[in-house]
Length: 288
Image (cartoon, rainbow, N blue to C red; front, side, top):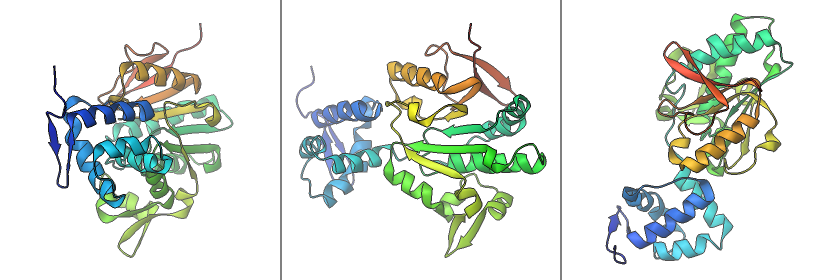
């Protein structure tokens, strides 16, 4: 049996004991669904010590007490723990599938509007990448739809990440992750050594704060959902719950795109796998 405070996870500015880490990860899972493995104490310490210093919090024990009492502090903590590195056109194949298969298939079925949801959009690279692809598709297929007929929505649990996404301004390092030169030229402008998403793209993507543990009903129905590289942090139970709610959020025949290391199999039987060149996508099964 493990004794109190036997393990210490160091960071550059402080440490968290095993007892404090256990209490924190129970809290984090209850609020966000994120499950931290036993060896992630260092991650908590490294991400939160600066915040604790700024807030004049002396220990992780004090932090755990205060985040249960102070909603603003809890928001800062969740922002720190959920904001991850991302990139433009991550893995490439989801965007090839979107342009070469999903959009053409949906256009054939002629819905009045195509709705696409980026469900863990972080600082906006995914929904903006989606919008760039839809614009490229429309330019190659003039007259099939207008931009106004394809709606792109990004949601995330982190208000800080969403604030950055809404601004659509990225430094050179962030703009360099996965963004080809021709797309930079077409969809961005360079000002004061920062890359600004052009207004026509930025203003055609909407953002909302959303915790995937909550209801999605207020978002309405979608034709395509991107839920990539987020469920790897969830428990098996929460994966099943999220997938069931996403199935309910799709229009008949709608599509779900998950991360390259993620699978729907074993968690939800509402989808069928469709292979497409270098990747896969899941389609909602027909009722009955």
